[in-house]
Image (cartoon, rainbow, N blue to C red; front, top):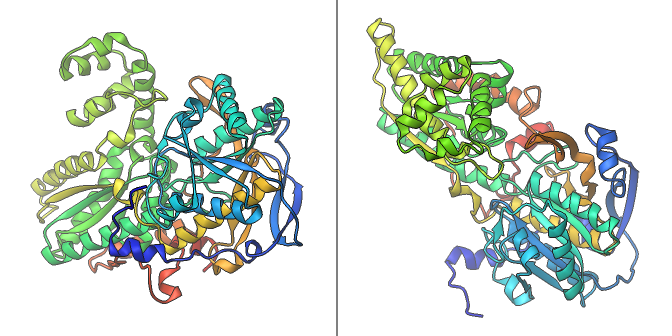
Length: 551
């Protein structure tokens, strides 16, 4: 294998040794809790998962020396990238080798499709050493293939039998771990002897609950974005002439926007969940932004920062209804696809929408209206990441400010710059927190596999304490599930965690946001991720976790 060319930081990060919970440093014993149940729809979930429903929570404790049988394992990186994925694999590998040196680890290439198409490599210590503490998913690649059909499960079982693989670890978000749960149930029903373990991954932060305090990658991504926001705020304070509209990743929840607001204290941060709870219109969202801009202009401050969650547009009730109608109308509409010009498509859509949705559609700038009718995602839904919400708000805010200026209410100058921070954070070199957390998740998965468990998600809790005090174990994936409508059918899925408006992080934000919006900016400048230095600087968890833990 050709050696990788490394930067000085990469070389230094290779020397970093991730910290482990005390329970994983020696021999491990399992402590079983009480039987669990799903978060909702208990009878439906139990009927669908008779073999994996109701399993107990697992916590690791110090144990006695024991011999473990050989367990060959396959690992899959699924979905979008998140910082720390390589360390999950490194922790999994190290854990397997410690528990039995004869254990082997295989990586399926390109995500779940690698399992189906039998594309794989053996992950050796030499190869894994090239990727320790690095960002990205490039060691084996990732993909968005869904494991949903029995023929896919059977093809996976074929390669597992050929390679004598006893377990599969799926590293992914809520959809990927839902697939892991279904796969675990199927393999138990078919008595294949193949275990399935999940690991919680997504920078969006919406895979969380009482047993999964945070998904990995969220910490690093938010630190990267917050550094960029801080840099922009320093520039805004220096130039004193631009309003920066910054859209941040996070389609289904506003966790990233909220965490970045807590780290950087912008003038405005829109929280999608609050917009939905208040049943706000798009015009009301714009008016809230305009009021802050006018107030600051009264004090000669014609600059500032505004954070916008990627999924905002779907949380505005009227927009949500419009998008739902468009999804139904355009999913398999060959007549629409045959139209050539944007104007033809626009007129065609207006003729099919309900009166209320048509009025909303007419009110949108043509560019945004066109983006709503672009190609759908694999689920048939609008691709929210392609909708430039920040540009929509800039256009509507500018129009409203012009009206207020004509009325003599607004006396400032409005110049706006738009930004979208997404891919900049997904493959960053993981923070110390994420490097430690992901390594522990992988090591925990190795123990769960060696103990013969399946249908569990690797869990590491108590994350605001020093790593030695973290609590490792496993949580049944069925415990996190409910029934939701997908493609017109009710399906079992892991329940997404939205920003709780009664939670400590949002309440803290709500207490101080007027102060941050006022005539005296209180910008914070977090700076780049701190990899070296005092623990209280380098090993901090997110502000979200600290506030949720009462710290």
